Image (cartoon, rainbow, N blue to C red; front, side, top):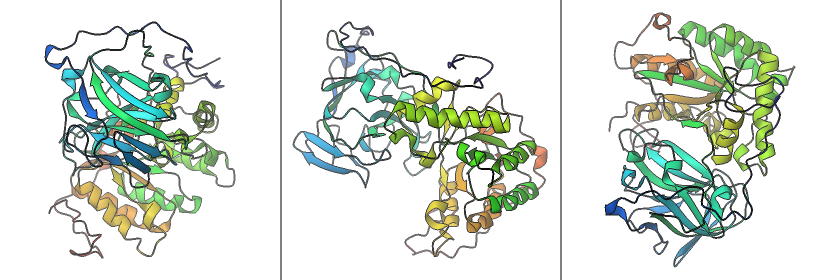
Length: 451
């Protein structure tokens, strides 16, 4: 039996079949989405970017690529040479603050381009403070798959296909590249209507993207897979500190009998921790060539959870935090109302744990918490990270916030109720941080967030 996203209450069937992607009419000419009434004060296009200036768009705000995306600016275009799905190009709608798109809500994002269609277009939502110094800088975004919306050299997207708080938009971005073919952008604008006969596909269901806990006064540790020999140290810390966390687990690791992760995570479940999806083989799945490849990463992870742990989860952390339109759409094809979980606190163990300066993991944690982050990514791949874990927990406790599972911090009505009685020791004041970094060091960050 094939899974569809509307099944309830079960999220999955035990034998999940791969679903085909929705078809795109090859020669469709009829307009399926009717033009809406244009607001009187916005009857002409809002030109966002015509790429005539190397540093600023037509609104006078910054545009540019991520540091590792090779680009070639010209008079009236920007050429992008992507090599990785995490690379991106942004054009800002405001000076790193909130731009209210609601007056344009019945209009269309129009992009003139040439080259590959194998990328994602996103409309990005700022954080609640509209403050680029806060973590996360972007609270969320919604995305469309370019291949579905492009016709010739034009892309038209109804702005209501971007399901974000459009009173707090900050930029339009191009990312999620799954081909190294060149992309050239010529124009980005908001227009009141479609060309006659231009086909716009229906909006597909998509996973909701989170970087931040929504429950007031909450904090969550999202822990990705680690090393078997460090598991008992992690369990001991969690039990002694009396907190619950969320583990994001790769399917292939569960199937590895030598690693014994199946028994480990069964024990974690019995202790009340949340176990969530993390793909099957830990690839940048947005960068995979085919939809079938993405589907297999999702489906095999789901089936492994069902078979070995006897559970279902709608929570998914994309490996490396890489997420684009295809990943979110395919999650929603197999899982009812999926939650895509990234982070606002990065311990940076991937960068520092095996370096000569592992203490920079502490600096990274304190920095991001000081900026308002409350949803962590970390691993137990290295003993130095595990050694700092207890200190991280006690620092958060000193702030008098509640540490809980990710589903609890996102106020999921299906999550178990938070039990404050687990907290027998609460913070009573400012936590003293012993850091090897000193003011004046180029890597120093005040962990309290004060300047």
